[in-house]
Length: 304
Image (cartoon, rainbow, N blue to C red; front, side, top):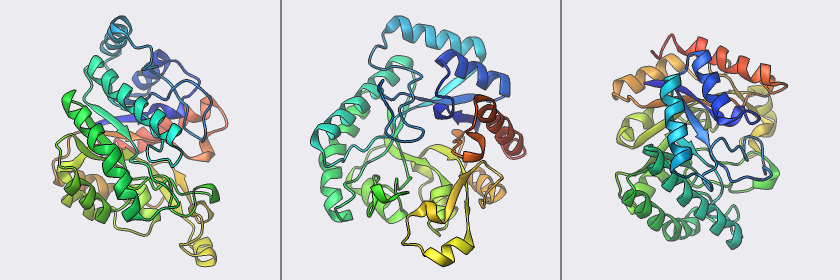
């Protein structure tokens, strides 16, 4: 496995500075965020460490030479919008930008793009599946044609009242993954697996690794803490940030020894990237870099 981090936590740094940080802190790869330039709509969004709109052969060559110089690889290009947004103009823009990431990944010699399926939060799962097929069949075909694998993160994007009731991402549970992969059968369509979301949803985050081992394209290492006393007060139908919070690996409730042992069981040998969303480490650039150092220090007992 290749231990890396998601570049969203370093929004103010340039691409070169992000790669320098990875090299200086002992990581071997980085998931590079490639949002379109502009104002972010939420935390950890709007981060552009590679601008795919302006990426040409000269810039791609510079990126690849810098990576070789620092002995760092790009695990995937990342962009996490809502391609099934009910606003058709927004949806079309998000889909268009995902296509640009696919083209950029090919140009850079990277075979992975990570994103969300999206969801119309006011429609049922079945209604969203109609939108899913209409949107994602051509997107996966486009990815196949360019040799790029699409890793879908399993984050519900349901944290506050603004995302209620259904959230902004359909691909949240094993029963939905089975249906997705049955309806769009492709070796280029898989998961960017984050155990923390299953954990705070009160689900088994180990068992799906075995069933979906051939669909694991990328893994996010993020922990979370469920505050049982708060959950007992508000219940599981409350907005999720009322009873849990994201944490650095080792500071939450995930059993990392068991999780990474299971990745070894299934012979997963791909990227495992720390995703820092712990508010305790957001006050400064120094704190965010410290979060990366602490996360690696904890994880290297399991990942070499």
